[in-house]
Image (cartoon, rainbow, N blue to C red):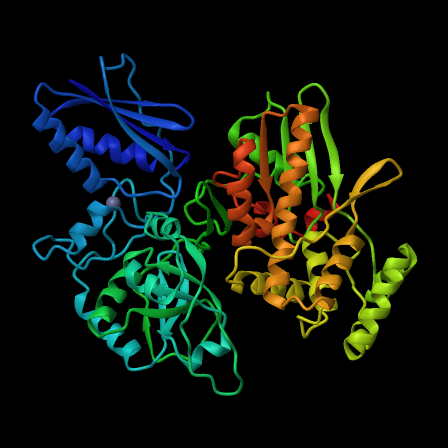
Length: 557
Ligand SMILES: [Zn+2]
């Protein structure tokens, strides 16, 4: 009998390729690997079904989950394939430990017991160091942290500070390092899809709403959304194992320099890398930022055009150059649009989200000038919220060009949700409101199009106007913020359906840091997928170039 194990696996890191080859080498039944761009198939042949069952068991013990794994299947097939796959010789990416190295490090009888330098051809950071049993060192470090002190730690990818979650955290920006998935689930509203991703070999950071509360010295600050992760190298892992024994299951981890009581500097990192951060939907996972373990990104002219964003990189990653592709370009920082690419007609900007207003007063005036209803709305708003009206009327923006995120920021300011004049922070407040909403439906905000010089634009005034109308009608801030985000996804979904009718496009690709809004991403992932084949960047951050290369110089290219 021949069994075919199929893995839909979209990574160039060769983790699965190597683990599968390794399992095959050791296995009794004879086997073969076949690989395409998006799939790896492993075939094994044996007379005896017990032998195949044992093989499947061994495989499941050795094979880590990966965020790049989409689907697995096992099928019975007629015969073994003829061709055989040869592992290409490439450098291994910097990667957290694999299951088989982990079991060695935890095995008292192994010579790698408590040896943080354990690694294999699949996993690890390629770091040199004196192998050995470092148990007592990790015990000391854990006890220092447990007693309340901060410890400076060299991981295999950079210098960090760890400590208990308490008042100290208020002075640094930090993430939460957890002992296990159960701890994360205890303190957050993590979904099952996020749980699976957190446990994957890439060990990504995921932003989660948490009920963790810390003592705060000077003012009441609510840390609602924090990024969580599990240990992604043996230095952090063994520290957490020892901390767990002392009853500490999560600590803060930060790069911000802090006064510290002790140091753990045995790891010698070759290069500083940023752990990746993911947003996880039901069907897709996107990488929001970071570079650890990802293929090196080549900066070429085609991907640095801000008007196109990362559209080209998604096309390239998925090899869509022969297809008609619609692209949603949704950056928080840069120009937003819907692009259509086809081999026959090239690249078209189908719809632009650009608008230019330099102050709230200018927006108010434009609303008044639109029509009688607009004039009435402003009068009502002014009468009802006189103080707010006077305050926000003075606010000016430095931004030359507004995009969706910045319009949300203006809405947040005009509705009085934000106590700052900063557009980004205000938009962030609106996003957080939407995340905190517990209902399932918000008010319908009007995202409408307008023609200017025969080009199609989103009308930002209508969006702001409807939001103001709902505030006057007494809709609460969480529900209304939810409506602003939800209606936008519904608008996009409608636009995509219309474009498909006109352009008969094959696929839709979405990119840009706005996808980091979990609510927006999950809804888009779910709803747009009904009528379209929806794709995101595979291994590159959604705003990739901006995050990794500092961004601003790209605007001048
Ligand atoms: Zn390993």
